[in-house]
Image 1 (cartoon, rainbow, N blue to C red):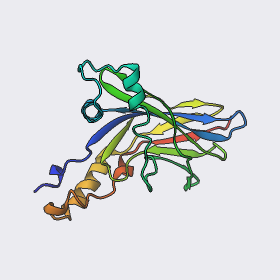
Image 2: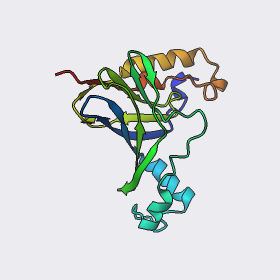
Image 3: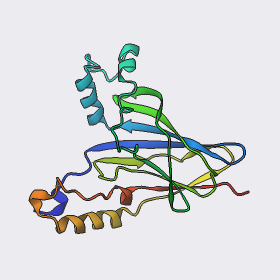
Length: 196
């Protein structure tokens, strides 16, 4: 059985990031926008009994019921947003919900992860280590403050080659259950620069 027959990822999320930096150059946090794919959004509507008329739009009451559905994080889940400074992980605070919307049948949620320390040299990535969920960084990264963000796209050819090599060494019957943690290889890298 070819390694590529193992179906990963299962959920696709368009991701937008807004980095908040104080006037004095302190890293205050990241606002994260997740727009779920059509199929996953439809599954959520069905699971929660929403959009019963099937028009892809929700009433205000339905939006209130949906708000916060992805903020119930289990122990050990780090939010699939990671920040580093000089190669060391920066602790991001618990998510603070900032709303939910539905456009053309797709759910978008917004949350904020507070942080501390200097913004210069901060590196940010959005990924699921298990690659069950694929986060696609869309659009430029907005920076609220005196810094700028540059994006280095992931080397997708190298990432897929790595996956194939890892799965080739795994018996086909075990491939799904022991899928390697390769999500970071598929992540774009956002770097902050605050000089000048």
